[in-house]
Image (tube, rainbow, N blue to C red; front, side):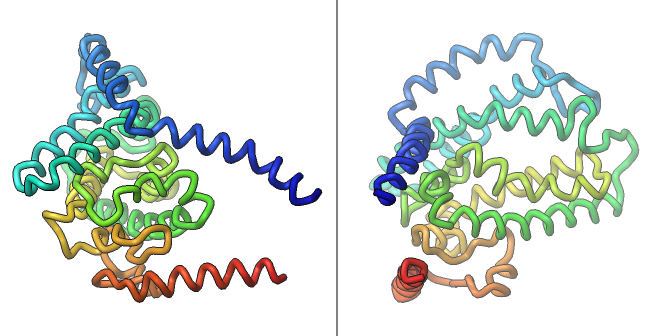
Length: 291
């Protein structure tokens, strides 16, 4: 009876998770593409550069993200990588692009929301016309260090059973072979939690200029695009990470420092390591049931 009651309580949660994951299904690609193309003429009306050093309303940031996000995160990286991909990988590449385009459409609104708060009216960063100097370089390095730490922590959390099955597992569906566009194959939770929190955290304690923050965001995007490419960077630690499923190694962002400190560093994929990680997880579950 208790078991049945537990299952009945769990079923609504599972239904919500299944519905949420279904929003990111590749079958929605055609609808998302048509909606985006139809919205472009509207978004281009009174289009402005929202990073010109002036305060702009949310609508300006929304238009900017609406137009630029699919182009900069999916279309351009996808087209670039197609130049060197072998023909036998083209079908997998096309599926990855469709999958990421759907994710990108859902991420337009939260991305615009974050960028508005970072750089818009009453922004979290500082708008200043003064020349940039060594203080800004220090702030840039601080942002990268914060991102390195929090990305590792959040990434480890996203590989726990609940978060992996409900959100992050979507990012790992094309296990083994990854493309640059897979960098953008994230849901709203991953975007805000794992992707951007590390760049936002220092702003609670330090006043950082808008352009410096944009530079750190740009560096993050270029780096994470490249380390998602099995063809461009076959030895990248994140490419190794994508050889695994939930039980993985190499959770770091820019360096292997955090992985080496916490014992999750793996220079190359090891089936033996994968087996040990799975066995350890099963043993932990068995121990919990026994207690």
